[in-house]
Amino acid sequence: MKYHIPAFFLMLLLAFPLLCAGGTVTEALKLSIRDSVVIMDRYATRWRLPGVVVEKGYILAPTPAIRIRQRYFFETISGKRFYASLRCHDCLSGFSLFETTCRDLTPIRLASGCQAGDLIVMIGDNQNNFPYYFEGNVSAASNQYLMLNLLSSFRGTSGDLVLNTKGELVGAFGKTCAKMQEILQAKLDVHLGGYGMNIALPACRIQRIFQDLKKYGKVRRGMLGVVVDRTDAGIAIQEVLPASPAEKAGLQPGDVITAFNGKTITSIDELVFKIRSTQPGFPARLTILRGNQQLDVQVRLHQINYQFDFELDEDIDPQELQLFLKMA
Image (cartoon, rainbow, N blue to C red; front, top):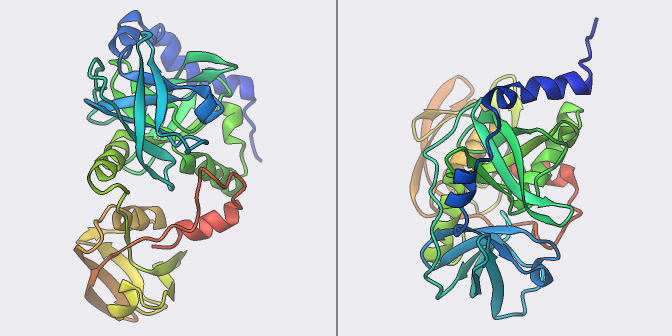
């Protein structure tokens, strides 16, 4: 017999920690981010989406829909207005790096981490009311994604920021987050947005995006060159791409990947995340099972070539994206 929990009681269950805490959006929190969270003018983005001051002179914000301008107009929550130049963008996450000569800005503090049950505040737009604060908590946390419960049916959009109760940046929503929610919705057969469930990128990934954009002008992500799938034996290689690091290293369809750089691999997401987090050109060590034989294989990863442009293509087939996410 299956039991169904009514949506009202599910929302009440998710809200219980917040009700006990007495609210998380304090005046101290608002004061701490008044010169760290900024808004790009709506003529460049179509919506009033937030950006964040990550370092003196640098802002990370959603890639503008209109890119023909040299400078873009921003405003802090406190009302300070200034211009910033678009320096470069990352099509996979949907974030751009802007540079400004305005020095009267405060870089946001980054949270050292978070865990399930932590209270959070998300900053977004609610029917042209910006900034609007959505309260919630962390359902699950890893270096790959944050699963959030919000006390509303609001669904995060690109650029929305996730803070802890101290006003520190816990994460942010990128373009891939909405697509990942579509995949999970199809896989789990649940409507994530209906219960205030959202997926965000953790602060460590946001920091990596910023550092790479500042240093290289793009986000450097490693690629092995295989398509993998989960089987009874483990994470098995289904296809080896031609002229890829995997082919050069002698990997074959049917090989089961058990570890990456000595760390045990238990899921496709974990394998893809570790490969993407490795700088292209750096050596890596794969542990594989080929039949009954365990082998250590040395590879040098390539830079991944994007197949999708998330800020330009809003109608990507979730099944196509799911295949792309299986490409390690």
